[in-house]
Image 1 (cartoon, protein in one colour):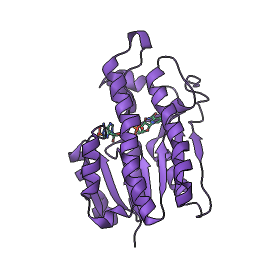
Image 2 (tube, rainbow, N blue to C red; image 1 turned 90 degrees about the vertical axis):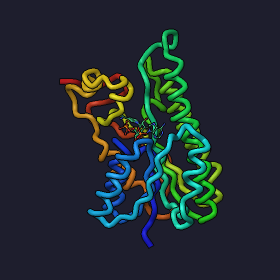
Image 3 (cartoon, rainbow, N blue to C red; image 1 turned 60 degrees about the vertical axis):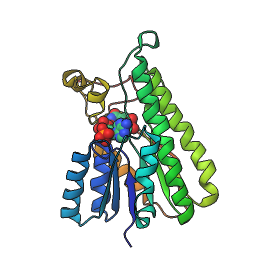
Image 4 (cartoon, helix red, strand yellow; image 1 turned 30 degrees about the vertical axis):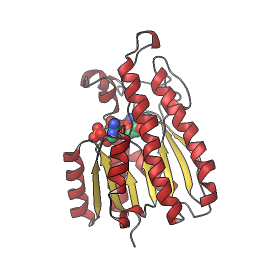
Length: 252
Ligand SMILES: NC(=O)c1ccc[n+]([C@@H]2O[C@H](COP(=O)([O-])OP(=O)(O)OC[C@H]3O[C@@H](n4cnc5c(N)ncnc54)[C@H](OP(=O)(O)O)[C@@H]3O)[C@@H](O)[C@H]2O)c1
């Protein structure tokens, strides 16, 4: 029977790249995100190219009831999830706390921490019932260090780092693997979202050096989930070669 991967935030960037790579490796997929049109288009193309079975769940991860009802309404066969990629997340703004936008803070905390928890709770219970599973949490170097004006985004990714450790402790007795992947700069829609559609400002983030692309992260996740049964990679930081820390990037 084909394995199943559930990928949150599959409408763009790292999540979309994971969907393509896991489909090519013959996984069936549950794909989530708010933009139903993108999910449906991706599902159709993966089905055509790889014969992948795809369940599409369009919802806002911040809405606890939507998370629960979308997942619980899936047919039983979809609840045999082998891999959860907890990827949906975002940054909003880049401001000091004293002039920060409180709505941006709420959005980041509700998405990156609370949404992450809502998904983790439902799916970890499925994995416990199935007696197997691997949860891959997408953190960030923002969860390993704090950079100027990154305050609240960094706090949410530090929370993901802590929750990754907590999940591993809670689930080890059930034989469920838990891994965090912490990327440095990856060129996706991330900066465009952070700067609220300002494409010019977003582009400047990646000027003068070669950032990671989403598929670099997807390939790393595939490596992590394809280790032997007795091997778990707890924590992995992946950076562009030109980047040493969040603020130390060599630009030509
Ligand atoms: N790019 C980087 O440099 C970088 C570095 C380190 C870590 N990360 C992390 O990597 C993850 C993926 O980011 P990305 O770079 O691939 O960015 P992206 O291209 O903007 O993709 C983000 C994904 O998250 C989904 N999402 C955001 N808010 C959501 C919500 N409220 N409900 C449901 N889905 C939501 C988006 O889907 P919809 O908009 O359709 O809902 C989209 O599919 C995030 O957790 C991010 O923090 C990124």
